[in-house]
Length: 159
Image (cartoon, one colour):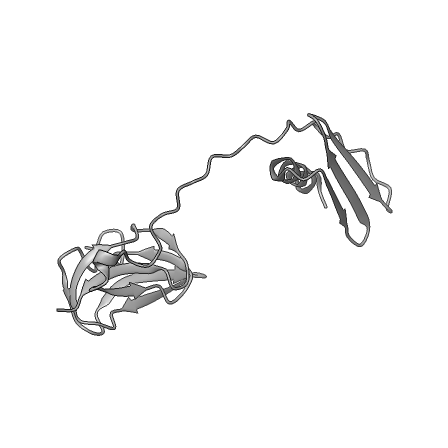
């Protein structure tokens, strides 16, 4: 465990609001205690090691809650639409390359088997094909955005 890992651990403990955290690995034991504006870190290592200066960490500051992006199931007024969801985790691209046009736009007519986007996962580019024919009503994810498994990507009006 290097100095950067220890500093990250101290920051994590300070932000979490925990009063004490103990970490024991094969040859390192670390205890981080926080109190009223004071942080105490004890590091016990079996092999000889130089002393690590530890900067005091301020008391935890409340973090503003981020508003989650609209990734939930479509709202009730969208219930007549079919949702195209991400089959994998990765980065969604709406066009085959930066200089090419988008696969689909709002209002585009699509058929079963048409490519609607590409999702890059571990340097592999996976074409996502539509399983429904219809018209793209809404695009729920921006180009080059990370997507989760089963995250809604597009709303399609099948009529």
